[in-house]
Structure formats: structure tokens, C-alpha cells
Amino acid sequence: MPPNPTLQLDNDLLFMLAGIFRADRWLQVALPVARNHPEYADALAKQAATKFSGAELAQVCRQFADAQRTHDNLILRNIPEMAVPVQECPPIHTIAVDPELARLAVGLNEAPQFRLWLVLLQMVRETNVNRILRTDLEVALPKYGVKVSERNLRRWLKHGHGLFWNVTEQFVYFVGYERVACRLVERAVQKNLPDLISTNQPGKRGMYIDVSGSLQQFEANVYAAWLAYRENPTIARSTLSALFNREPRILRQWDTRGGVDVITNEAQFAPDYFADVPDHAYMYQAAIGQGRTETRFRARMVNSYHAPSIRQHGKRGQSRRVFRAVSEYLESIEPAGKCEQVQGGETTLNGGLKPTGRRYFTDSKRARSSAKRQGDRQRYIALGVNKQKQMIWDYTADGRQRTTVREELPIATQRKFRSRMVYAKDVMCA
Image 1 (cartoon, rainbow, N blue to C red):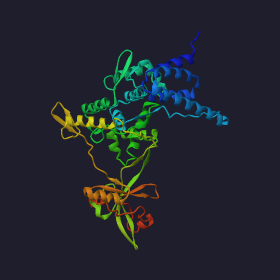
Image 2: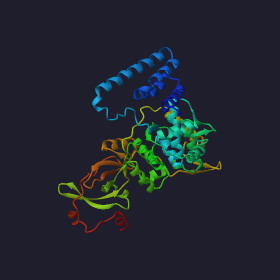
Image 3: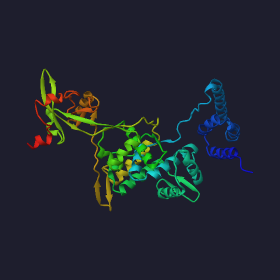
Image 4: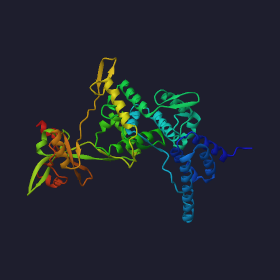
């Protein structure tokens, strides 16, 4: 006689819930199951009666009764819409994690193991037990949209042993957030990749990252989540390549897979800053009012990256403690707090990325305030979008705005001043 699948599922569910000792965490798992599968409600109620007592049991009984009443009312009110499936639970494929930690793991080519660690992290959050059966992990992976063969799973477990987890023949022992962050930073030091940690270190509020799909899609999701956490930054492609340890062509693929919009930016230079004009800038004629014109330069600058809407976790959790632990480790390597690599105990290797401070401002008021505090240095003020759908910025050092978004004269008018395009490198050489 074949086994009853409902009975088997019931036993597996009760076994999993038996490992949850807090009533509030138990309710987070049991209530959605009882709401969506009423046939399991009796078994869950019996387990609650034997598992909890006193105030905890009263809380469980009360919330179970409220959930049952809500379920009955919804059925009576929405009978005409019963044919339409309603998904009440949040997507199970998204897991909250530190975006800088995820970026660091991708940059170290540990993305397969890190994705597996995220699934283990979510399982530990739900059960509050850091020891997971290997068979339970194999069953849980398809639920999170992770498709992997037995051979690759064994390979991932072997490669992640000692870094993300400790593996035995039967169990996988989960390694926590703080320890994994310190180990990844240490590995970046050992591999001479200072750009991964010189300006950006783990210890930030979590972003919900989708772990489903292919490995390339997961890396693109990490990339998009990092951009969303940075609030859609204006950043050089070369800087992104250094932060993720990937070639620009891979980043362009991630832009497409992750749904990231790339915004083209151009900077305008008034005569006060002709000394700072890059060689690839071109000359144009700008209207400055009262029938007067002025020669200025415009140059292509770094892009802005607009990531899709990605939810951020409401609380920081352990991130502050992790940031302190990582900082203490880096200071133990270099007492001055510089992110330098130590080789052989004597020589050091500096990273190419250095903190630059804030460069891009939404208005001149903020730029002037920054210049008042920190002095003259490279700054850009957002002016708006021109007719070619390009974002125009005003280059300034003191925070004062000198150009406008649509000041360039029509091409036909500019031909009266010069017959061909003139670049800054030609003018400087002349």
C-alpha cells in the first residue's frame, strides 16, 4: 500500500516546527500553513497544546482563532472570486542580506556557495537551529528556486567548507553572519584584492535579494540590490569593475538581467574651470542673456544607474557589530586603518580605490554647503535633462552654479562661430 502523501507532509511539517521553541517564531510558520491548508490545523493545534503552556499557549490559541475567523469571512465575502488564486505570503525566493557582504562574495567568485549560504541563513532564521540535515537542504533548495544537481551540490558544500559552513556526512553546520564577513575580508586580503574592501566594507542594512534562477541571474540580482542600497549612484564603470572584480562587459550583461537603467550624463564647464576640462570635451556656444554668448565645454561623464525597486530590511540587526569586527580586523593588519594587503609579513600593496567624498549634488545649495565645510574640490550639480534625454551637470569647485541645462545654441547658429567640432585636446595643444 503506497504511503499517504498528506500524512507524510504532515509528519515532515510537525518535525520541522518541533525545532522552533519560541511561540512568536512558531506562529510565523504555523499560521500561514493553517490559513492556506485547513486540513493541517488540527495537527498544529495538538502540537501547540503539548509544546507551549501558560501565556504562550493562550497567545497561540487566540491567534489561531482569529486566523480561522478571518479565513471564514474571506470565503463568504469573496465566493465569486474563488477561481482567482490569491497569494498572501511574501515571495519566498527573496532573502534579506547585507548588500556589501553579497558584493564581496561575488567579487571573490564565491557566488554559488554564497547563494547556498543564504538559503541556509533563511532556514536557520525560521527554525532557530544552526544544524541542518543535508537531506533537508536538498529538499529546501527547489522551494527557493535553486536548481542544482547532486554533483554540483556536493561540490558547493566542499568548496564552502570552513568558510560558510562546516560539513559532516549527515549535517551542515551553519556559520554566522559576523564570522563569514570576517573570513571573506580575510580572503580578499590573501588574494591581493584590496579594491573589494578599501572603500566598501560589510556591515550594512540588509536588502531582499532574489536567489532563484541561474547563477548569472543571481549575480545580477546582487548587483541590482547593491545599486538600490546605494540609492542609484552616479559612479564610473571602472569603479564598479573594481568593486565587483568583473570586466565591464559582464557589468553590461548584469544591467540587462537585473533591470538596471543606465542614464547618460554630461558635464558643462564654464570658463572659470577650463583648466579642469578633460581632453574628450567638445566646445559649444552658450547663450548667457541679453543677446550675448560665451564659449564653454561639455564632456561625457560617468553614468547613473537606476536599479528596480528592491525592498530594504526595516532594521539593521547585527550589521553594526559586523562592521566593528571587520574594522578591527583591518586595523590589526594596518594600524592606520588603511586597507592594505600584507604579503610575507613585510611588504604592503595599496588598493587603487580611495575615498573621494561626495561629488554629486541635487542643487547648488547643498554643493555650497559642502564647499563651505570641506573647501574647493571636484563637484557636480544636477541641472536637468536636455532634449537628447541626457542628464546635464554643472562642474563646480566652490558649489556655485554657472551653467544651465538648455543654454547651448542650435547647431545652425553655432556654425557662424566655427565650422567644425572643436575638442579640448586640440585647443590645449594649440
